[in-house]
Image (cartoon, rainbow, N blue to C red):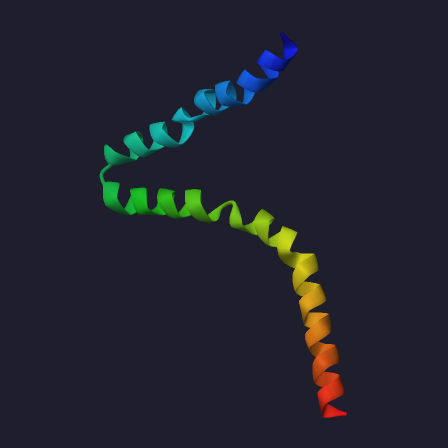
Length: 77
């Protein structure tokens, strides 16, 4: 029984949370500046997750820069 709940729970949460981006989009269409407000909402919706995701890449980028600096140092010397 608990495995069934564990299997259905993520799907139920996705269905429950799905109207949140749709409702503001519909309300934006009824504003005076619908196009500009909708573009701003879309840009924020798509680009807002980027800063936390960039933090996940930080260790890999630091390692890459370290390797590049070591390579350049060995090449120059």
